[in-house]
Length: 231
Length: 255
Image 1: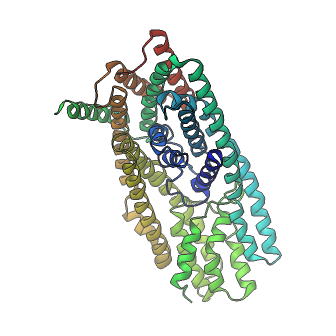
Image 2 (image 1 turned 30 degrees about the vertical axis):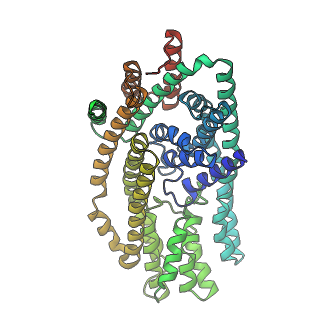
């Protein structure tokens, strides 16, 4: 049932991402908690949401350029981390998250390749629509537009659960075989989170971004430490 | 002939499917024809005229999906005049061809590279500091802004036709985008600090090593990315390197 839910969530996210709505629901920050919630672990999904959002803050569809498929990878990574956490009885930990990330992230690149195939298939839909109009079926012609939603749904619905399964198996087996890796993997996760913040700052392409990024970090760190010291 | 409000609302709803069959040949052509179909049905009761109108909207079209609302609204504006015999059939096409490029550039620059990343960074920081309610608030706020603008652009395009350009210029979207980008970068910096504090032990204690790992990864990562380092290899390198260093030194990263 979990993998079926993952497939549905991934499929709907793939549709929302480009074909319909584009209301930020397929962005990692919303999609990871939704995926976690679908699997019964909202907090686990939320734990991976922020770094994934910042890592792929620059994944946008500019003109005809195809970005990486961040939604597909997000469902696979979150699903892998949540399922591994459930299998180990620890919930989503930095260790399960980083293994699921390392296994699931390439799906973002694979998804981009799949998007190219979708565009080719959609080209045929457009040709069919022109033919239908020539045969005086205008309603049938324009309704072919909706058929373009099927392929992105199907691809994500198959690939995301598969990626989550591989990620959860890898994390579960690795941490069961070498429990002492939990600590080092935790450090790896935090290091990745630091890089993800940098990737977000870089993606915004602002002038003097380096200075603003540093000042923002230092200010927030001081405020955070101040709040910690305060009674 | 004027299109009833209900039909315009139907067209606006269909605008949300503009990119459903995006393709490299006609790009959003099928989506545009799908969106405007209810208006053409209302304007051209004669099937031959309706098919002719639909055929002209099956031609190449590509714009930012939010900004395209202004062009769909404007195309209806022109189609009303074509149906009334006040303009030639080429007028809606000319309108689309003139505006699609400039509005795509404005939309990409404002919505895709400024507004959405800004709210993404805000939601990410919120998730780290306040949990899921902050994420919900950021997503709702983003959608209030983008849907309001989309609806306003559609209405302005329909009512004003070519004059919608002046309205968009008055919004000064590129200037607002610059400010949103800078604010977004600051939020990313604050998120790095929030991650460092979490890694360092939240409110219980502080592990300087963990804070340093996050700070080093953020600082060195930023420099490497600005020098052209590819994102994926950098992410793998940082995660694996952090793990290896901790494994070799026997440090488990717990505060």
